[in-house]
Image: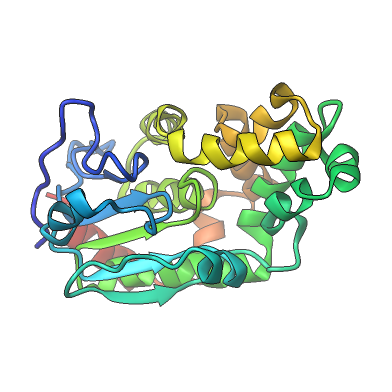
Length: 265
């Protein structure tokens, strides 16, 4: 079992990785509780400071699941905790628009075409549809759930900002555990106060592309309607969340039962 981490006075387990947090403590609709110290979500883990490495290593993490694209992983390699296995699990086609928006921002002409005049918000809704129906996403999120269910734990999963790819991963895992939709959305929206690292490089990209910051903001924050787009798209394509789990992700009932047995008290 993972070690329950202390939260600092500023509300972070790791101040250098602001979107790193424990999913433990959330209640299910049946009154059970997600165990602390077993399942963490995060932004990119290349930025763990020297001062916080000991805290990071002391969390008892045994699996690190990196949801980023190959380019992201190569550009900013993770710091893997002592005793943990590192695994890259892709949930996006590297050629998809949603996987390359930061690269697009480096080209002013492409950036203005893709993201100006409210296009950024439409772009994000498209990303959230891709995350629940694209073949790579279905394979990757099934892998994430199976790793969480089978262990070893504790496990941390992350992307770059820890809000979209990771946000859907957390929503999926919490939904499978029986956490109600309102609580899932609350956890999802908590990422908005934890984007200090992301804002630094996104502001530079916005400046270099010549886009006003307000045009870029929809890509730097989460919104309840983004997550709702994923759930609505699931209903459109599969009919229900349960059908998505069985027919889309192809997860077995035994895997879901094992996940609940491991993660709930």
